[in-house]
Length: 362
Ligand SMILES: Cc1cc2nc3c(=O)[nH]c(=O)nc-3n(C[C@H](O)[C@H](O)[C@H](O)COP(=O)(O)OP(=O)(O)OC[C@H]3O[C@@H](n4cnc5c(N)ncnc54)[C@H](O)[C@@H]3O)c2cc1C
Image 1 (cartoon, helix red, strand yellow):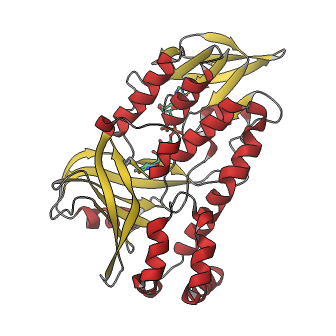
Image 2 (cartoon, rainbow, N blue to C red):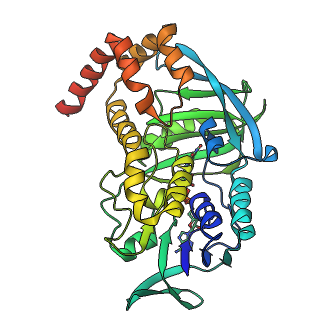
């Protein structure tokens, strides 16, 4: 028996694959899948190589990014491949239904409390019962109780995303707006011409809350969708030594630090684990580790960028040859374009170096 803790995207997707060949039990502490929502639900086109997204889950499509500098100068990046904005609760429910269809045994409203090792097996304890199990998969989100009980929680850090679904004035449908001077970054993602998912992200403090109020302006909040996000930890253990205890998705801090998207990485990790548990860590490191690491380093630099430097960055990307690189590549995999950008644009080296000086002088 495999016990999967958490029916978010990572846990349900992994269960849908593993249950084809194994006795899988999927435990979820909530009664209803996918709620409460704490996510913008924007995905790049690369999700299509992992799973087909039913049309009715796509709320809107994003064709352009508008990036606004602190001095209000804006550039547009036209995406070669459109992004999707999903009904996030519907998406979780869809993946969960796939796990059910594959034969996973479902335990809703059942919370994992811990486990004990007994001979070669584990006994997991929930708020309702105890189960003998051969393998435990923690897909239980940022604060992963599985990682904690297994002693592989590590030194994880969190950031906070304030987000609301709201009525927002003057929306440009199909255009996601990013404002560089609010939080670590901020976004306005339209569902249509009246409603948007609007948020800021960063260390949770008064400044972030003030930035959140600024981006919301006077817009009418329909739903609060805020939540925590783990910062990618390159030292995170994905498996407890050689035991059959694993973590995937946010539970394993598999979130890219540039824009803090984690869904695609959680799905890919679920796939690698289901393919071959003994190769999971190696495959993750080979396929995703580099991109997550680059994203983390980019984020560390961006967090030390002052307003003048943010304005310079926008000027650099005003140049068509530079913005074209962003248009044509998937931001989930920066290793595929970062070198190309640096080769094309000497000003990026200088800017990067200046920001690095800010970083070390603090
Ligand atoms: C404001 C905000 C905006 C975001 N926007 C995006 C975005 O646009 N695109 C993107 O890709 N990512 C985005 N993310 C990140 C994304 O939401 C996560 O990366 C993603 O949800 C991770 O999926 P997961 O399955 O690993 O974990 P989760 O979705 O957190 O699922 C974990 C599940 O485990 C359950 N659980 C926890 N503890 C227990 C327990 N003890 N017993 C049983 N069940 C338990 C939880 O109830 C939950 O259902 C955003 C996050 C925030 C906060």
